[in-house]
Every structure is written in C-alpha cells, then in structure tokens.
Image 1 (cartoon, one colour):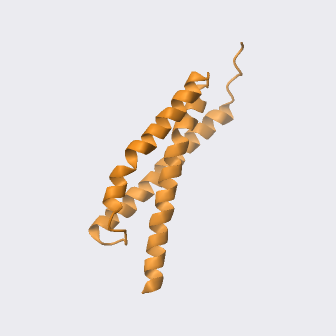
Image 2 (image 1 turned 60 degrees about the vertical axis):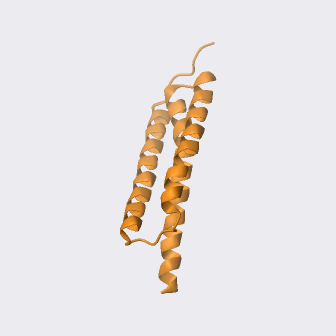
Length: 108
C-alpha cells in the first residue's frame, strides 16, 4: 500500500501543537511557582495534584502515540497524538489556576 505524501502544512501543525503544549505548560509552571511563594492563590492540594497528574497524563500520551504508530501513522501524526492529551491536561490546569485567581480577586 502506498503511503500518502507528507504535507508540509501537517508537519507545521504538529510542531505548532508542540509549541502550544510548551506555552500551556510554562503558564502552569509559572502560576504554580507563584503559588508556592504565596504570590498566586492556589488550592491546598495543588502540590499533590501537580505530582499525581503526571503519570496518567504521560500514559495517555504514550498510548495515543503507540496506537497511531502501530496503525501506520506518519511521525507528525504520532507527535500530534502524543501531544494532544498532554496539552488537554495543561490547558485544564491553566484554566483552573486562572479561575482560582480571578475568583480570589473578586472576593477582595
């Protein structure tokens, strides 16, 4: 079976997804660091959440990438499959941390 030719736009999209993951993750790291210093409102269990979420998120990413690779996916498709669940987790964390800060500010 002939492989579909690689589309440069799809490669760019895969790397853009990786860049978005980096942005989301860095935002979360920054807010959590500020939270540890007392400069950003975070929940009491934030440190525990930070550690507990990693293994399941990476298992989801590895599983998605392995499935895509096993089904004959191109490298850009494998990368996209791996990045998607990690970005989803990081984005949810960013939204939660921002919402916590906004609600904390409204209470003042």
